[in-house]
Image 1: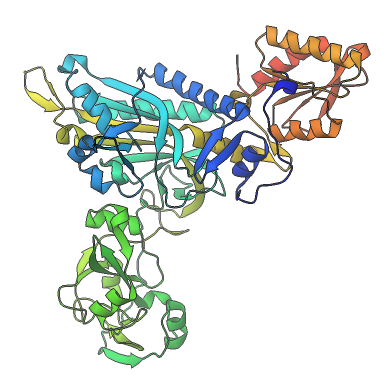
Image 2 (image 1 turned 135 degrees about the vertical axis):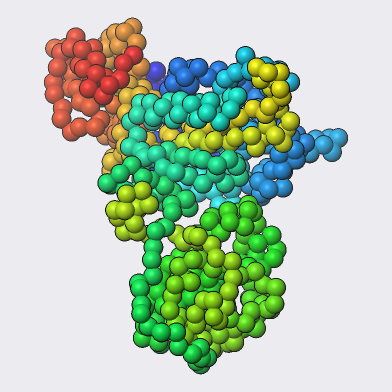
Length: 574
């Protein structure tokens, strides 16, 4: 492509809306443009990278015996009501009506649709296993779209669904997709980890996330360096024990604590350790108040709480002041488990039951109880684990310490079981002629998000540094002086020769200052850089790779082999 004819509106300044490198650079490099919050257009350079990610995904899915189709983004309410997700999916679902007042949604995912598609077509075990996939635009009305392509309201995703005869066969399909995803993200040159995930609104018992490591990732993962354990902070099992004490249970007493509301303030007031406090948090779960008590030195996992209550995450929210006063009789900051309003649901993380003589809110403004002990002074539903994982917690697999890191979720796989086949009455006949529900799996790759994740991992202060596999073009030829006939002639010759051998190449033939061309070249990050300058008359050009500062003068007939060598070095082949 000749850049004199190209739509590539690069920006010199960082847009004020862009918070992270990928968002900044994709905007500055003229690869994306915002329409409204969370909705982007992919401009020519950006769309080429999107299509290349799609092609990698497509090749690996096809190699795994998955078949591609394309379904509508518009789905009728009836399908989602059958699975129970029309109400449960939450406010992220885009809902709309047609002229006949029939309700639809813009699909955030397609479990119901795929199940409905095959249930009247696949009748026999002889037609299984089956795996179908699509690459399509999805819609989620994010409360707070941010970080460019990381958290959008419209995004490109590959979603696949497997249908099997039983749990064992489903687990084989699950591993097959796991292996395919390993190949996909390895080919995309991403540094990633596979971690246990929370199934959330998708349902099912087992899920894993493929997480590209990044300091700006919204997800936090816990992992062990001594074994292969890794999980999202929402899913990670917390192995934590309260320090053992041989002190005897003392008599409970109420102490005035004027304006002492926070754990930090209480630690100073009582001159004791954080873990000696029972921290009470008040929530509304589907509109009903719930009080949760955890050790004062830990944080609550709202995901674990919602899962225990078996409610969608969006139906769990912190209670307002009036609710807190109603159930405790005190202002916020003074709630505790002793003497709550009768009938109030009280959940207790199991670690709280081992704290001797703890301090808790007094359910009276400006008061706390001291010497409170579980069993004697209060009781509630004891929950195995409601805590967020922390650095240096114990690995539940091998007992060593856990580490925390941030990452970007680029793929996920779910063992759905019969959640959707049961609700949509999708059945097949087994070898004995007996009806059985399909056992399903669901598998997603964030295509547009993967492009952003690559940019997060491959950039420098000058711009993007694309790996060959998804670079918009493999090489860029910069003609320093477009008015110099020798430079133009050699640049055109190299351009045509490289195209003939299948190398995707840009020719910067714009009538711009050399500095503008060089800055744009660095910004858009094309891997191979060829500069046609003063030595054009001798057939000599400057050759360099974007990922290195090394430059060398070479004869133009050496370029093909040098580029192939760069391909081989990165494990990329045409």
